Length: 108
Image (tube, rainbow, N blue to C red):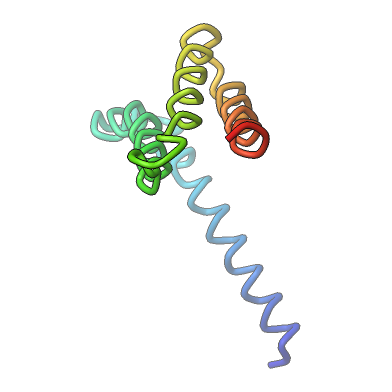
């Protein structure tokens, strides 16, 4: 099999697997309620993933050396306030990313 044909087969297989994993829950639970465990996971997984991302982002911050994590703490405070005010995850993500990049590139 040529490299191009091999790559096309791999891309098709990955696309099919990705589509199947997205479509199967809708097919399985189209006529009945999902189990309570699945509802609990659906409700709690996004906040847990965001918490893990915050912890991962803060793991390499040098808290005892300048700038002492000031850009990170300021950005977390602004994003928290913005999210409490507007309740819009996309706005919080984009504003937080933009603010942090501005602080790190221009001020600190």
